[in-house]
Length: 53
Image 1 (cartoon, rainbow, N blue to C red):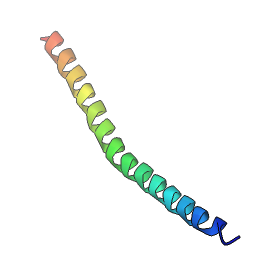
Image 2: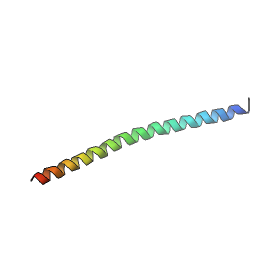
Image 3: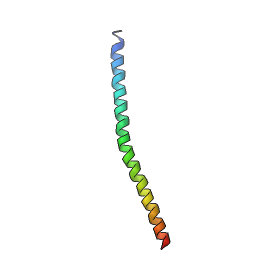
Image 4: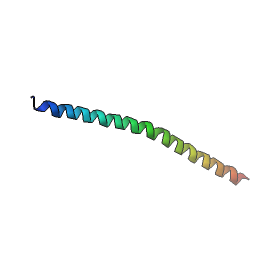
């Protein structure tokens, strides 16, 4: 049982890191994708607006 403990702690530590990285990547990715999509929409709207003229 004692030999299993460090592996368990290492695993927990690793899982914590993975969760942290996932959350950080989500925080980075969501605004970026939102900006990208809004930029695309604006581009599209500008295209329509230019076509009207």
